[in-house]
Length: 44
Length: 396
Image 1 (cartoon, rainbow over the protein chains, first blue to last red):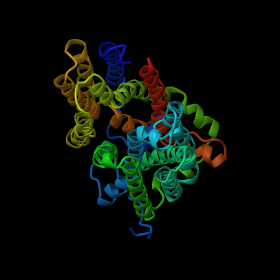
Image 2: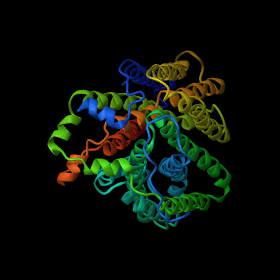
Image 3: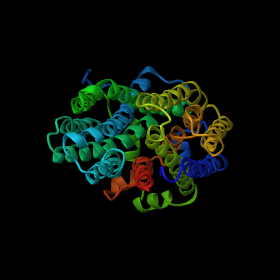
Image 4: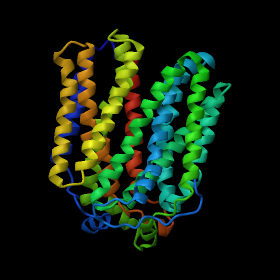
C-alpha cells in the first residue's frame, strides 16, 4: 500500500465514498415517523 | 447494580425519550463500547504480544482474522442474531457478557499463544453475539421519532472506547506487555459491571409480541427477499459496504501512514486518531441525534452534507501534499462527515427495515431470519472484507 502511494489509495477511497454517498442519497428509504409495525404492514 | 427485574419500557411512538429508555439504550450501547474496546486493545497489543509470546507474523494475521474485527465477530453475529430471535434478548444479556469476560481474561492472563488464540476467538464470537441483540433492543424500545437519537447514542459509545484505549495504551506503554494486560483487565471489569447492571432488564415487549405472531416461515423468508424488503437490504448493504471499506482503511492505515511517511511522531499519530473519534462523537451528539429523526428531508440533507464532506476529505490527497495540515483536514472532514453519512444511518435503517420477519420462523421451529443477523452480519462481513482488503494492501 505504501508503495502504491497515498494518491492511488485516496483515489480508491474517494470512489468508494462516492458510490456510498450517491446510492445513499438517491435511494434513501422514507421511513420517517413510522413505527416498526407500520413499516412491516406496508411491506407485507 | 440491582438484579431485580424492572418492567420493559412501554413502546410509545412519539418524540419523547424516557429516562428508562435512555438507561436501557446505554446498557445496550455498552456492546458497542466493549466491541470497539477489544478491537483497539488487540490492535494496540499485537506488536507487544508478538515480542512477549514470540508470535510469528502469520499468527498475528490469523489473530486479527479470528478476532472481534473479523471472522469471530461474523460467526457470533450470525448465531447471536438467530439465538436472540429464538430465545429472546434477555437470554443473550444474561450469558453473553460472561462469555466475553472469560475471553478477555484468557487474553489478559495469556502465558502462551494458545491462550491468546482461544481468548481472541471467544471475544470475537461474544462481541458478534451481543451486537445484533443490543441494536435490536434499542430499535425495539425507541419511539418512532427518536430512533435515530437512541441508535446514534450507541455510536457515541463506540467512538468513546477507542479514545480511552488509545490513550491508556500511550500512558501504559512503558509497562510493555503488562500495560496491555491492564487494559484487558479493565475491559473485564467493565464487562462484569455491565453484565450485573443488565440483570435488571426484562424481555423486549416487541420481541414478545413478535414471537407470539403466527404465520408461515417460508412466506416470511420470501418476504425478506422480495419487493421493498429486498430493496432495503440491497440499499443498506451497498452504502455500508462501500462506506465501511473507506472508514476501515482510514482507521487502520492513518496511524501507519503518519508514522511510515514521517508525517508525525507516535504521539501525533495517536492524537490525530483519537481526535477523529472525538469529532465523530461531538457531531453525532450535536447534529445526528438532534436532526436525524425530524423528517425525511432532514435525513437526506444530513446524508448529502456528510457524503460530500467525506468525498472531499480523501480528494484532498489527490491535490495537496501529504503533510500534517492535510491529514488534519482529512480527519476533520472524514470524521464529521462519517457521523452524518455513515454507521449511524446504517444502524437506524437496518434496525427499522427488517422488523419481525423472524417471528413465524421462530414459531415453526425452523431456521429463522431476522434483522438481527442481517444488520450485524452486515457489519461483520463488511469488516471481514475490509480486513482482508486492507491486509492485501499492506503487504503490497
